[in-house]
Length: 142
Length: 115
Image (cartoon, rainbow over all chains, first blue to last red; front, side, top):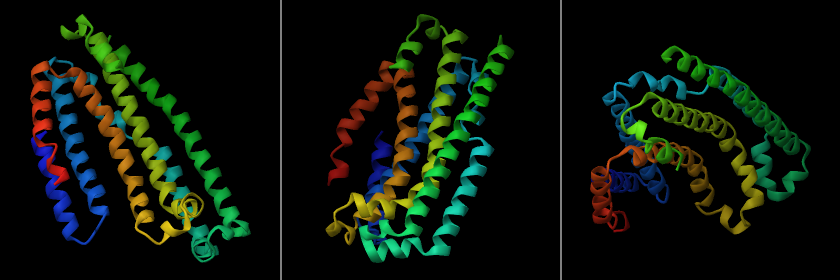
């Protein structure tokens, strides 16, 4: 815990001197949380390994499925392309709230909503495969 | 509370596989869902946040550092989520000696970030 506080303070000072301003505290917190996550992961791995139950903890199961990553990557490219092609960001920046009456802005939002729902659908479909993997591991151990 | 309940089971203290398997499955599923939503948030947050802020933020704040800070929060929230899940498990699995040591250090050094 001492180390985490020191990491936070040092990160905040260092990032502040890089002229990041208010963002320095947020990024310092992110760095601090990264160290805490690493420590927690080490503690958990040690906890399971010390009880000869290390095979119960498969860190490979935490990663999102490649299908979700693929659909999300594709969605990102489509959103970026739509924004570049029709200048949606520039319209919003120039006109403010009135930009929401523009067809391109509304269609950009609709595109984002439909792609987000697709990604969430893929997430829930792939979640069932993760549950199957866990069940297979249980039967193997048994 | 779930981890505390599972890991405080007397059979878990004796490292019986049943509760440990349940705890590891829950932990890995939780982190998996958190990382999956992180991927989705990272994909849709940055392009749509400036659009959403036009409605959510008053006009006088749009020219301040508030949009930049809110953009940084898109990356901060997933770290908070994952850290919360893992530390919940650690808090449930750690011995009282470990927790006392952590608490003393937290109290002693908590004023540091405020200086």
